[in-house]
Amino acid sequence: VPSVPAKSSAAVPKESAGPSVDCRLTTVSDLMAVAKVCEASGCEPLFAEQDELRKHLEGSGAGLCWVAVEANDVVGFAFCSSDGLFGHLLQLQALGASADSVRSALVDRCAEACRGKDLRDLRASVPAAVDDGFF
Image (cartoon, rainbow, N blue to C red; front, side):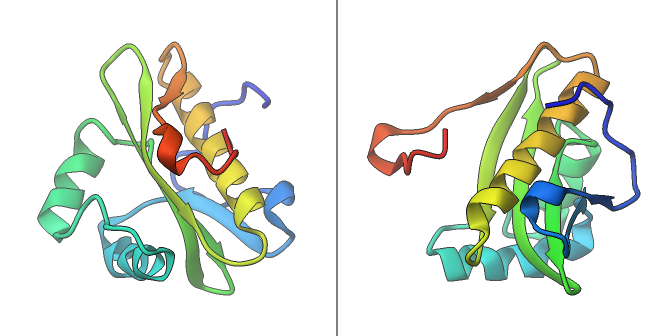
């Protein structure tokens, strides 16, 4: 992963996710699209209300949460936070045949954003019962 700080607001193409998938920072207006990804993936969204997501994006998740967009549709997302020392991957989901490459692109963006904030690393806790081999 190149050690280039993440761009603050522009969509950033990620070749490994496929030529038509872009990763960009999450906004509050992405909440419904994220909920649809969760529903299709069979998981609960971490944030159910716009106020919850807004607080996260303005607080410990500022500049660390990303969505993957393909043909104007959100096809994946990564919610991260920071404790001031490390970044923490809180939730990662992606849909479709290229889900692994989308997840990889999102994790790369999160890691780059952590480096851009001078955090030591991005950490992810994956329970053994749900580990699909991605990590």
